[in-house]
Image (cartoon, rainbow, N blue to C red):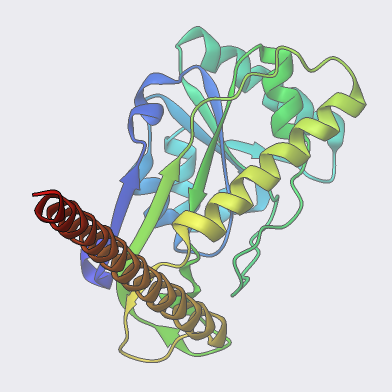
Length: 260
């Protein structure tokens, strides 16, 4: 599919995909392009959670069922928890993993942000005594976005962060702090490092991406000017030091001549 769409996927921190199980992977949830992201990162013995209605969608639902997806009935909390707990026990037994979109729904945001995280994935990890592994995906609205009529080729960037243990989390308050901390960490990583998916522009791009590009260029220009200024100051410092040494040597020579 990615070859047909002209979309490339680059993954940083792939070792955490292979070495962290059993665990729960959490990632930001944006659009249908998340399928490409999952295809490029899918760890061995991993299952994804999804709302039950997707089970009956032709092709996608069939594929998800065959891959062992955990379909959650969001209207029945007790049944949803039972499904997750049962799935988790099986996953731990085979040293597999569960992939959960922590926001709970697609954001479709053109800004570098994430919706607040749902708590289910974190309590599931706590109960199973397994770590959370954050996965940060670049904003893909530069590749596909209905509002701005975007349909471009390009590259999606993914950064997998080190596993995070919940061993020290004991109370609801501590869990809330932990979840907020993970959310802040992932958003910071998105803003500072991962950013937007880089498009090959065939159609258009969201205005937020254009602003991001301009800000990035301004920052790079400012950094270059700062480096040039530092280089000039260093050259002047060396030049002044050499001049002082020469003057000092001249004075010494003159003194020696006068003494003679």
